[in-house]
Length: 156
Image (cartoon, rainbow, N blue to C red; front, top):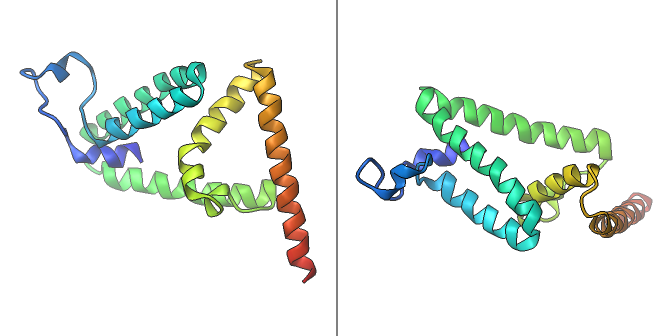
């Protein structure tokens, strides 16, 4: 998606005569959206959000360079994007026997899912075990609720 958003081109004057030339980022829509995500993630979980910002900025940088380097970048980015969504739906169906959270709460899935996955990575190396327990309890409750509702639906 970042590669597609980078199609916007510079949103601010960009070049050797602008102050933007001192940083390696084109001020495009991809960068703007990423900065919004970074701000939100840092507000929610400062340390994890700050660490993740490095990864997100790396992704923006390469998305913009990808657009500049490949003449068919839109086609490639679109194929990867659609294939990823299909794989997510198939994976959820096989592994979890349920649809992705995207169908239940689109905003939560788009905004919070990347941070949730990042936190899972950090939890696996011992980051904030008390938060991991709270998040795990919340996830367990949500799964139990889902299974209960699903069993009610299949009985009727």
